Amino acid sequence: MKRWLPLVFFFVLVGFFAKGLFLNPREVPSAFIGKAAPVFTLPVVGQADKAFSTTDMKGQVWLLNVWAPWCVSCKVEHQLLMALADSQKAPPIVGLNWKDKSRDAERLLIQTGNPYVAVPDDLSGRVGIDWGVTGTPETYLIDQSGTVRLKHVGPIDVDIWRNKFVPKIKELGA
Amino acid sequence: MTAPILKRCGYATVLALSLHLSAGANEPTQAVPTAPTAQPLFADAAIESRLMLLSRELRCVVCQNEALSESPAELAGDMRKEIRELMKAGKTDQEVLDFLTSRYGDFVLFRPPFKPLTYLLWIGPFVFLGFGVLIWFMALRARRTFKSAPVSSEQIAAAARLLEEKP
Image 1 (cartoon, one colour):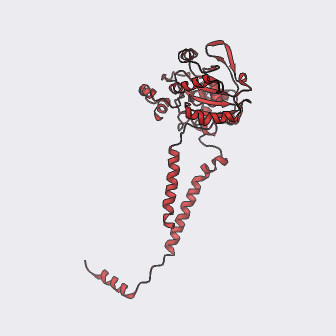
Image 2 (image 1 turned 90 degrees about the vertical axis):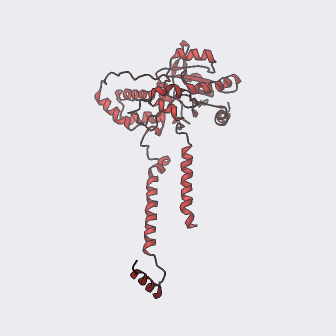
Image 3 (image 1 turned 90 degrees about the horizontal axis):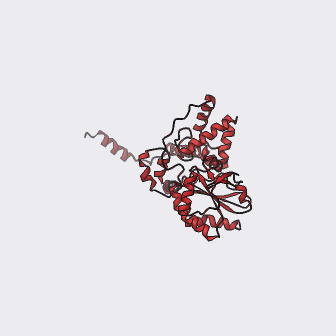
C-alpha cells in the first residue's frame, strides 16, 4: 500500500490540473450576485428624446444583455434572444449597447430584428464599468426587487438558457 | 477562444480579419482596431504617478494576466480614466480599490485579500513546503536507522579476495 502512495498522490494532482485546464478563465463570478443591481438612466437608441432607467423595470424579473453591433458572438446569440422575445414566456430583455455607435445599433436591429424591450445607449462604457462588464456579450438576470441573480459571460445558447437561466427564473416565480 | 483574446489585447492587428471569424467568445473591444491617438500629456503628475503605481496592482479584466497599467485593451483605458477621475475627486487609493472590487470582485486585485475563500491560495504553498520537509526528514531518519543484514565471515573473506584480485 505504502508503495502506491506516491502514484495515488500523482494522479490526484493530475486530476486537479486537468480540471483546471478545462475551466473557462473568462467565467469570473460577478461581484453583484445577490446584491442590488447598479442603477442607471441612459438615452435610448433610436429615440433620442427617450430615456431608459433601471427603475422602469422595478417589480419584474428582467434580463440585461450587454451587446454591441460590432460584436460577432452577439450575433450568435441574437437568434435565441429573438426566439425568447417571441415566446412571450421569457422575461423582458433590455439590451445595453456597450461602447458603440447608436446609429449602428439602430441599423442592425432594424435589419436583423429587435429582441429588446429597450436599448439604452452606453457610449462611454461608464455603466458597463458600474456593472462590472468585461466584454460582450454578457447577460444578467435581475429579480423583482432589483437584485442581480445570475450573470453569464459569453453568448447564450439553448443549453445555457435551459440549464442556467430557466431554473433561476422559475425559482423567482416569473 | 485564444485568438480573439490576443486581438483584444492589442497584438497583430493584421490578424484581425481571420480572428473575426472565430465567434463564440466574449469580445470586449471594438472590432475595428483603432490606433491609439496621442493623449495630451497629463495635467497632474502626482495623480499620474499614483495611477501608475496603483494600476500595477490591478488586473486587466480583458487580458487577464496583464496589469491594468500596461494593458492596451480599450476597457483598460476606460478603467484607467475612471481611476484618474476618482483620484481627481479626492478619493484615496483604498477607496479606488474598493470602487473596483465592488464592481469586478477581488479578481481585479493581483494580491487578493486574505479571507476564508483565499486561505488555500495563500497558505497552500506553505502546506506543500511542509509536506516536502516532512518527507525529507522521514527519508533521512530511515537512512540513519538503516540496519544492514548480518554478514558472515565467509562473505567478508570472499569480498576481500575480490578486492585484491587484479583486473
